[in-house]
Image (cartoon, rainbow over all chains, first blue to last red; front, side, top):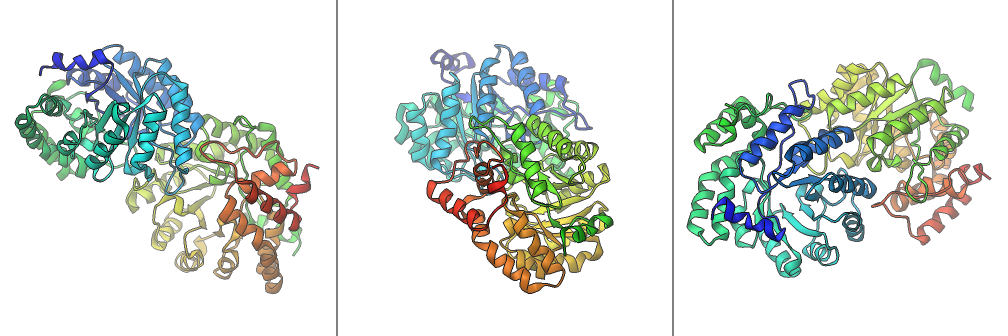
Amino acid sequence: MTHDEAKGNAMTGILSGILPVAPTPFHDDGRLDADGMRRVIDCMVDQGVDAICILANYSEQFVLSDEERALLMRLCLDHAASRVPVIVTISHFSTDIVVSRARAAAALGASMVMMMPPYHGVGLQPAPQGIFEHFRAVNDAIAIPVMVQDAPLSGVQMPVELLARLARELENVSYFKIETPFAADKLAALIAAGGDRIKGPFDGEEAVTLLADLDAGATGTMTSALFPERIRPIVMDYRAGRLDAAFDGWRRCLPLINHENRQCGLRAAKTVFAAGGVIGSDHVRHPLKPMSERIRERLLWLAREADVLALRWGK
Amino acid sequence: MTHDEAKGNAMTGILSGILPVAPTPFHDDGRLDADGMRRVIDCMVDQGVDAICILANYSEQFVLSDEERALLMRLCLDHAASRVPVIVTISHFSTDIVVSRARAAAALGASMVMMMPPYHGVGLQPAPQGIFEHFRAVNDAIAIPVMVQDAPLSGVQMPVELLARLARELENVSYFKIETPFAADKLAALIAAGGDRIKGPFDGEEAVTLLADLDAGATGTMTSALFPERIRPIVMDYRAGRLDAAFDGWRRCLPLINHENRQCGLRAAKTVFAAGGVIGSDHVRHPLKPMSERIRERLLWLAREADVLALRWGK
């Protein structure tokens, strides 16, 4: 299946394939790099992504002020224009704040919003009904799809029954990125429980669990921006029934995927984008720290070995 | 010791006694109630508190936008004027943001800032050196004391050695509110390790552990604003050697303290302040929920039984 064939998905209005997270570039002194942000979007368009997700955890959303979030949202939506759909992450503990972020994103042209359940620190979280109402408030405020991010960072357990209820009762809540342990079994159970209300069962976590998640029925993945041009064909091959090609592709990608997921985290994409001239600095805001030189050297070696587009994009 | 005698502490520039957290009042529709905020400050001044802490967890800081935080900080510092010292909570995962919040608080006349170590969700936290640098950046940016809030909500373990290092190496980091399990033993160990660099070893958690914390050397407590006029004498009696009076006072307060700490949380002060006409509504922002009617009735009964000032303040 070519990229053009795959775009058939767009006809149905359902996003699938690969929807990676854009890193948020900073200058060496920590200021936002607005030009760098535009170049990140341009590079990701060239990577052939199906959509771009902004302001996610891999965008360092937890070190941004409200003002910076608003600025980045506007800048990214403007700059992506209609070249590629943009998914805006809106998570916040406050239901009112998450609703106002959702409204702002929809008004500026976002194609989808993504959110975690409400959480703060360790243990501050509502009962299941409060979680449901939090999503319902967003659902009722906008007319674009909502992706539920089910990730361990929130500390909130969302059983399949709750996720399926969200899908059944809230028309816009139709995408689910499952990043919990044993993600594939949860995806399969969710698809069984939610049926065609689950429009986008998604893999996450840099694709470390991609093969099993595709087996379970995932229709796409939300990785980082590190090398979606190499991961997207795995999804396309799998969904077109070319299982051997999908498996070979995943196996080729895994050394870099694992190095990113377990050693680098959100720093991997920034470091490769900086090395490739997409952005000027791979600075992460304190208290995050640069990766060690040994981890960085291995990352760049693996990226060269995988012939990653971002590594030559700005050269 | 009378209130005037106790104010001798102010001469040394060291805060002790009771520094309660101001609740953040909202209207029934969730909007900030600025007039109510001023009345909360006025009521707390009448309660005879030694300082007022704003924007803390019991102020629902996690449901406020950046803009609302800035507005509340300015309003509270203006309105408290020089009647009572104000402590501004500045916690944020980003070191740059916490530094800019600290600078803004100091510039507007805060007497102290309070902060937790950097945390986000479950498990996103720096190594001890990153925590140290986070506090050092604040220490270096301002010339007022910093209170370290050591609370389970952050999910960050801060061993006594790290807290003592903060106290030894960072001149402004000199107050410590310990709310972890077995707080008294941690306070005693911290005082032993940090010596006179620990200018304010504090009890927290609504005073559920106050007696043992005073035994361990605590010089004060940071409770809610529910009834500091009843809890402050416990601290004063204890520190003046009137141990029987302190014990009797604590025993009289405990039913309400425990009901607040274990059944109501931050909602207790709001509900009593609303019942007493200090504020117009005890609304908490979603996904927080009102307490059940049964819990509320018992709270008000206990507050009447303890003859709480806030319950008659606005009448």
